[in-house]
Length: 343
Image (cartoon, rainbow, N blue to C red; front, side):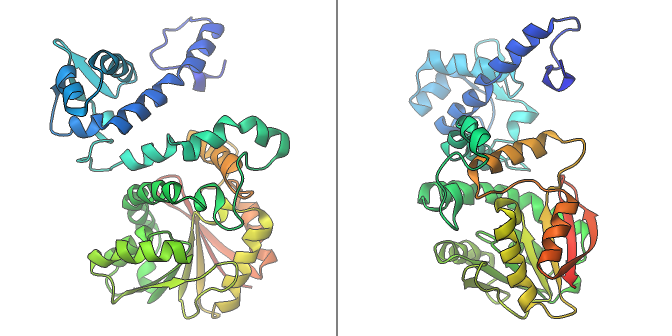
């Protein structure tokens, strides 16, 4: 059996059929994590270790059931359970704490929510039909028509937004572009990070009306109102003009080739000859990573024909839209920056 399926704690020589049973049974660990996140266990442990009883009392949980879930999380290396049923967070578990330097609680809650899991549970439907396992709106995807799902995505993008701008800003000279247009940038986490990193630049955020309102509220307390304009619109119909750099950050991976080219043509139509387009995407490789295949299957089951694409596939889309791929810059975190210009 492939070594990727073998837990590092499985002793050498364990038969493959037992490794497979453990692999299948490992499903319980992310579900145990989901229950702990929903119950507020990581918030309860944020300020230090506590007993199972005290946590259960504070969160109105069944003490015995909580103890069993925490034992599972201890096996997974997320918490420690010491003598006297005292529970603490491991360094891995600390990433889910409100005090985490790199906060992941919202990302974890999103990935373990019904928004993601329900389509994945119907993966066989996608396997037969090649498309999303849940009904999708024409523009919003699986979660777009539901406020609760959209808010889960918003919170997750908030955590991602702490990471992406830093890694991407290190890899590309954003400071050379006076005006950056972020297309389909959600609440503006990515753009806000760039504006903070490069005080001389201005930003324009394009989003659908229902998201643009939430974006304004999100950006208001950051003191970026004079440098960041939120524009309501549809990227399939019109892109704001006047940008020196247009950014599509993890946007095209949500769409099939036809609709991806539609967006790219709209961008090309407003780009000046010296303007640039930057795609921030995870590229499909010959040796797929864990992150790549997870993202690709989520896109298969949850998006409007989206997928993780190769550099060559992106280049073909760009050429169809009258654009040229200049270069690819690798950034930390597994993402690539594809710099493009008008053909």
